[in-house]
Image (cartoon, rainbow, N blue to C red; front, side):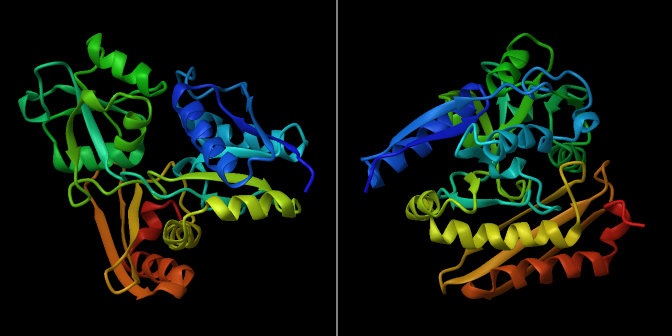
Length: 310
């Protein structure tokens, strides 16, 4: 088979590049005859630099779109995404598909504090920062004595804002902190019973042109089957709820000891005052049906108004 050069689109943040290089490492192992190059992209509304309300430019999906354009226009062959940033309430652009789901890493959220401090040591009114409405709602629910404030920037920038005193603590994905060597800054990790993760949290995915059969075959080789099954369930939940990153939706799917799939999910109000929860278990092959079942349960409980449904 003739060698080929594949370009993978990514943002320029330290975390995005670390995740992209992980994909390239896996692809080189299964296809050493090919070349895999990083294709760095800067969008007009770079997430790391945007200071206002992220929803004004379409949420994190705006940055996913910037990478998708590179693939659709042929400047790149594929794009790297953190799956939690890929909108699940709408279909992917025509002609694109998700071709690989890397094995899920730690799905939990973590707290970053200053040296010598901890979550329990934060006094009433202390500022805890996050860029996520999901995290904000659950922080207000579980830690009402803290002031939850918006916190933008890439992961190392947000950690720097803790050190500078702009906030007293920050909540970020544990897996992301580890990917960029900041695991030593974690002062507390939230178990899912305290803070449910974002749909797709801890999963790196690759988007490509569905017509590219050669690349699709390579991506299938690096995709993790159990993770792919769980992501099918989680994204079916998002699609059925018609909820995006502007709504506090949380949950995760796992493979049980009996090789079934179990999905746990939550929808809440922005202030964390109203919380709806649902869970279900189905055979491994029924991932999409599982997501739809849990979504139907939440909607039956009254999730529609919380999601902005008319």
